[in-house]
Image: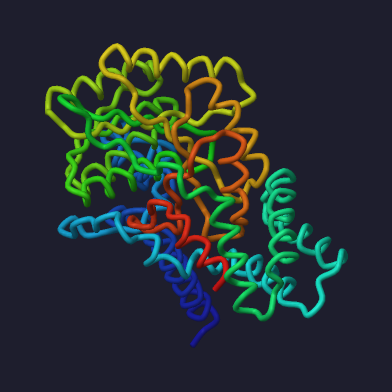
Length: 382
């Protein structure tokens, strides 16, 4: 081949290569292929469910039912009689150390002043309070001088009798659950966090188990979850629940609940009130108003003060203030199965002259029991 022919072939190759490169560049993103979607092009979850968000309740407004144990709706509540005996082991769980400690001290071969000092320390540690402790020790000293303590069995018998006497078994612990020609009205009060709403629901369950018809009044209108929680309890036992809008006048809701109970011919209406610190005079005055307004419909038969047993002597002070405002007729001690000390029962009864009528011994729906002195003392000494 001549030089000219080589030049012509080279030019042809260059032209062919250039054409191929251009075609490849143009074909790298052909118009028939969709571009990959960007983040902005992906529909957001919010856009997809936007229409529903306007009617969805915020999380904070959902019912708080952490203290409830779910129970099938078909399960009938058990009668309240005998519950404390069935729950006796839970009483012993938190209080047996006190009883066993006292028995050990009183069973010694020689009881001197140092022993009595230890007895006093044990009783004070049980939240019994100074005055009841002094009273109990004087009674025990007298019996030891007169009768002596020959063995642990004798010590147990003596201690059992004195503790029963201290807790005053003569106090009436019956709830007024039926009035002639009208519903019995029970008002549930207490400070924040003691478990009033749960106690109200459990009380309704116990009353239904005893054959009573019940109306519940959700007069805690400051906590949205309270009325929903109470509604859950009511649905489980077939009790009517009267509620009002959030922030409504509690006295108005309580009034309507009693009115509904009268209209239905119900046996009992139980009214749950908002928790309030006993040191806040304005809130305590409001509680007094609730009681006065309710009494325009029917007398208030029971005012149950719910106390957290683990608060000890502070619970006694709470009880004193509430008693001044609403004439407390009975005490409900919750969380008595935990770290509580049983002495609080004697302390609050002594200071108020008001009996402990119910005790809470767990988170289950049937863990609220009528208080029985002898069963309680026996659990202490197990």
